[in-house]
Length: 598
Ligand SMILES: CC(C)(O)[C@@H](O)C(=O)O
Image 1 (cartoon, rainbow, N blue to C red):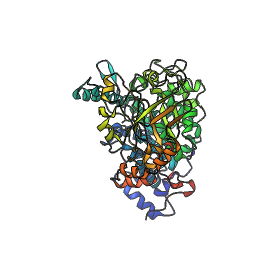
Image 2: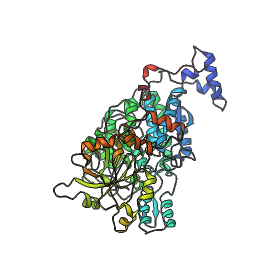
Image 3: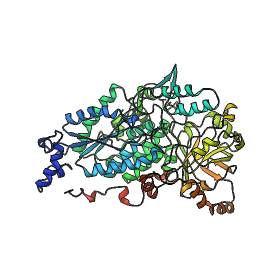
Image 4: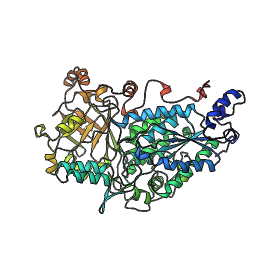
C-alpha cells in the first residue's frame, strides 16, 4: 500500500489552517483544556477517533471501555493521537420497545460526529447486534478510513457438563417451563448460567454473526471476530487494531475500497457457512446501501443458499464461542471457502492485503466445531428467499430446520418441499402471550403461527418477536416446534423454523394485514412461494377494510424518534434504512468539508 505521509490530513482544516489562524486557535483551545498540547495537535499526526459503544447501558459492549486503553496505546505507538467519544448505546436485550429503533439513530449520530469533527480515521468498537451495522453504515456514509474491533463473545455458559448458550437457552427453557418440565427458579438459573462473563452472546446469534461478517467484509483484522471478550488475545487485538488505524489513514484506505459488491457477496456466503442470523440480510443490505453498492435480497438466495454449513454452533449446532475461537474462528471458515472456490479472494481488507493473502491455507483446528468443507453439518444451509400473494419477500433460515420438523412438514413424497397449514394469527406479542395456551384456539400440530404489526413501522422498529412456541398442550404431547411467519424479526439465537422479515409489513399495507385465523397457507420452498389460499376477489375485498385494521392495531408513537423514523424508514428487505433523499445514504465526496462553526 502506498504510504502517503505528505497528503494533508483532514484534521488540519481544524487544527492547522494557516489561512485562518483565528479559527485554528478556536478549534485548538478546547482540545488543549484536558491536556493535549498544541505541539501534538499540529504535529501532522493522524487524529484517530475511538467510537465508543461500551457503557453500563450496553453490557454486551461494556468491555470496550477497558479495551479502549489498549486501542489508545496502539494508536500512540503508531504515531497517532486518540480521541475517544461515545456512540448512542444499543443493547438488544435491554431496550424497549426494541433496539431495532436505535440502529438508525446511532448511525445518524455517528455520521454527524465523523463528518463534523477533526477526525482522520476511526476505530469502530463493534459488538452487540446492531452496534456493528450502525458503525459500519456510518463509516460507509462518510467514507472515512475505519477499522472495526469486536468486543468478543462471553465465555461459554455451562450447567454441569452441558453447554448453555445465551438466547438459545431462553427459547428452550420457555418451552420446558410451558411443558411443566422446569419451574421459575430453574428457568432463571439456566438463563443466568448462559451469561458467565463480559461480552456478547456466546451463540451464533446476531452479534457473533455480524462480527464474523465484519471480518469477512474485510473491516477487521484477521482473526479478530471470534476472540472471547475476557481473553488476553482480545487486549492484544485491541492494541494491533489501534496501530493499524493510523496506517489506514496514511494509506488513505477508505471503506469504499473495501466494501465492494464482491465483499458483500463473500459475506453472504460466510453467513450460510456459519449458520448466521436472520438479522444479517437486513444489516448487510443497510451497509451496502450506505456504501452505494447494489445488493438485493435475491442475492442471499443465489449466492448463499447452496453453501455448506461448517460451524457447529448453537442454535444450528452444539458448540459456543470459546469453541469457535479455539477451532480457528472466521479464518478457518474463510480459508476453507477460498479453497473450495466459494468466495472471491480479491477484495482488499483493512490490512491493505486481499482476502486471499490474509486467509489462504487457514483451516479448522477442531473439526467437530468447524467442520471440514467435505464433511459439513449440512450440504445447503443458506436462506430461502420467498415471495407470493402475501408478501414480496420473506426469508427462511434452512440451517435450523430440524429432521423432526422435516418429517412432520416436508415429507409428502409427491411434493417434498411444500406444505399447507392453517394460519393462527396473532396481533403482536401481547396477543400471542395472552392466547397461545388457550385451548379454545384449537391449534393443531400442522398449523402455522403468524404474527403481524411487528415491522419497522408497525411495532415500531421491527422487534425480535416472531419467535413463537407451540401451545403447552402440544408441547406436552411432544410437538416442540411449529412454523412461524411474521413481519418482525427473530432472535438470531432462535432455532425455530420461521419465515421472517416479511416485506411489505402489515402496517405498510402488505397482505399480511388481511389474513385471518384458520385461512390456509401454502409454503413451497422449491418454487420459493408462500401463498394465502384465497381467490383474488376475496383478497381484493378484504383489502378494502385494511385501513381500519391498521388503525386498530398499530400503536401511536411514544417518543419523537419513533415518529420521525416511522415517516422515512424503508422495509426490512432493503435494509430498513432512512429513505427519501440520496443524502440519507451517502455524503458525496464533492460536498467537501463542513463549513467553519464560528
Ligand atoms: C439474543 C438476542 C438478544 O436476541 C440477539 O442478540 C440475537 O441474537 O438476535
